[in-house]
Structure formats: structure tokens, C-alpha cells
Amino acid sequence: QVQLVESGRGLVQPGGSLRLSCAASGFSFSQTPVNWVRQAPGKGLEWVSMISSGGRSIDYADSVKGRFTTSRDNAKNTVYLQMNSLKPEDTAVYYCTSDLAGEAYWGQGTQVTVSS
Image 1 (cartoon, rainbow, N blue to C red):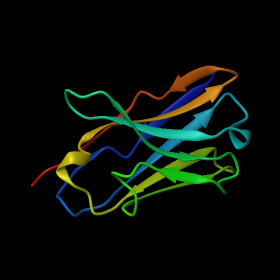
Image 2: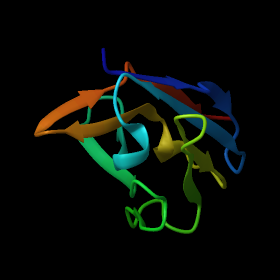
Image 3: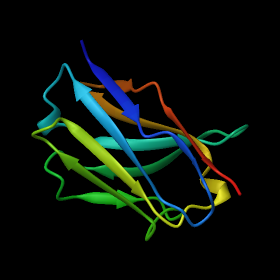
């Protein structure tokens, strides 16, 4: 059974930092790219970042480039999203997602709130 479970939700002040984790199980994690996607209140889905299966290729949305860092530990079947210099507009539910043989799998999401 494929599972993606995000953790690390929290309330943080503007300029603060937070690290999200995505723990995967039920598939060949080390051979699978993982994306982070977010959804702000009342808005659509926004792609945030992608990390390749081996972690050598990483890409970010312009809105988070230079502030967010994604990494992975294939030995732990986990992907991370380190978020620094957070802004109120980063407030959203954050999801990790992977495409397996044409089918998209999503975690349940974790809430990040940036507010003073």
C-alpha cells in the first residue's frame, strides 16, 4: 500500500523557519521523484519543488527559490522541505506527491501558517 505522510506542521512568525518531512512507504522510493505542492486558503494548487530519485536534480518555483530547500534521505524513505525566511503568503497546506506508473499519490497534507 502506497503511503505518503507529511509532518512538521506549525505556526511561525514571518522570517522564521520550518522543516517539513514526507515519509514514504509501499513503493520503490529511491527510484521515484517527489514533488512538494501547496494550496493556500481559497486558492488552487501551486507546485513548490521537485527532487529527482537520486536527489541530484532539484527544481523550485520562483516564489520559493532561494528560501526553500528540498532534500531526501533514501535510506529513511523520507523527503524534506526546509523553509526559511517564511512569508505570510507561504501560508498553505503542503503536500508531497509522487507519480507511480502514471498514477499520482498524495499525502494528507500538513498545515503551515505564517503570521505575527
